[in-house]
Image (cartoon, rainbow, N blue to C red; front, side, top):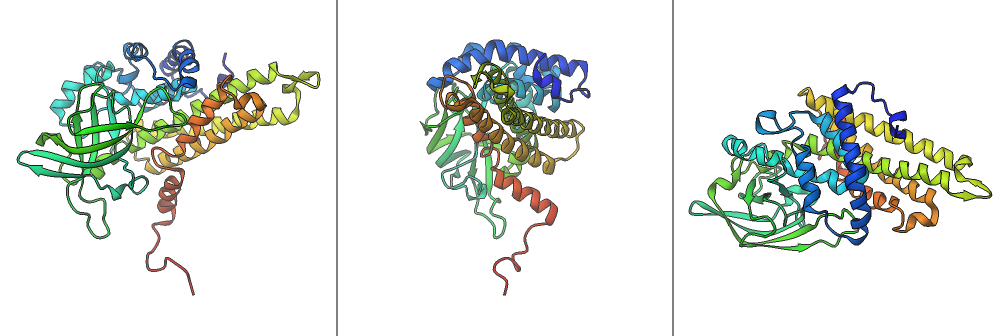
Length: 399
């Protein structure tokens, strides 16, 4: 039994949920972790053969209805699998999301593509951010103009992971001017279908030099008269901002699960290390300072896990949970950086080498505080829901 099973409150999981959790855990330990240990230090990409195995196991179609070839499960099962895969390699815990089609895709197209996506044979990327539009999403400068029945796009996009290997990219551009006080108006979403391994004519890419999140490439994209058919527009002109919010709750709990998986990796590796490492003629597991670190790490992980599970259950019940999803993402990502840093401290100088995997968990955990909305953005969302948005008349210095 894993130490995580001893501390985790899994009593509310059904036998079926425990079974898929164990299936993902076994796969992660046998198939993913050895590849992560080999490839991540070199900055290399995970092989297509691994993705094929994941497709066979249904990991790309966890929430896809059974009539379309998916497993027909819920957000909680999605979270359980994500945590197990991320405990081995966060990039693999992330790649299962690429089988998700945008909800605003026309129903006939969804019906056509869902079976392929559920098998991992049709995978996508997401392109929202720009060099000057990160947390300030409404500052999008990429333009899309009509040219006959087509759309022509020009601009620059940033942080598009797997843009090269994707079969489609959901890309955001401005089709109309922003309105006063409502800068998000005029942003539209486009479904860019492309050949896997290539960029379409009018699009070029430059890999971002990342310190972590290896296994796949993240790209800066340049758009120079990228021509798309008229039906590439998703959800109606000027409604892209709302389309981007459609699955944000699930995306944030997915990040919370990734963060928990990373922290688990640091904890489990640290537990093994403290029994092996001898100082002052005894294992360092005997020292109270180390024991208290392990205890705090375990408690913090379980707190974040249970919050993520509760949000997943809200999603499965069809209840709105934007506030709780932001809380789960904030708590888990902040916890992950703290716990993985403690893991390095426990390993001492060895933790600051690539000979031990704890440094990988630390590098990747740092990213969870940034993507899917920074910790500061989550705090803004949470405080606005509790206190209401700041009154612009009263904002600023008081006399």
